[in-house]
Length: 166
Image (cartoon, rainbow, N blue to C red; front, top):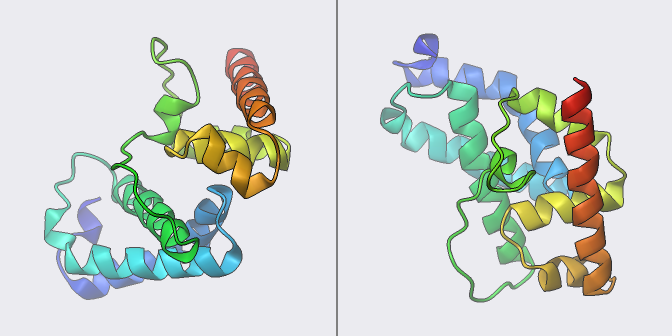
């Protein structure tokens, strides 16, 4: 968004306006309220420090949400003593459906559909979509790995059904 370019005051104001939406988004990704607040704070600092990196190819909101997604994973791993792993770059929209399918839906419309899932399916789907292994998700939830795989499968099916109806 061109109106977000320029002064740090404009960027700061836009971030403050987005803050409640950012916290909800981080919590949808499986973060606790406290971890979500930490991730949002880190995201806001990163955006302010790297505001010149925003090139306008996406909307300002989408750019910030991408940074928040990575910060949420980093916060989770830092707070859970996560060790090892690789960089995860899968976007939520690409991971909700099979790799051969392309779905063009606004991010927030898609998140509303994800939010309609049961909490168990939503957590399994989003955590796995963000790059956590089935085993890591199973450990987070305290359930067998097979249960996580089933939840992810049915969550994807529910999302695909909702996309076809819309």
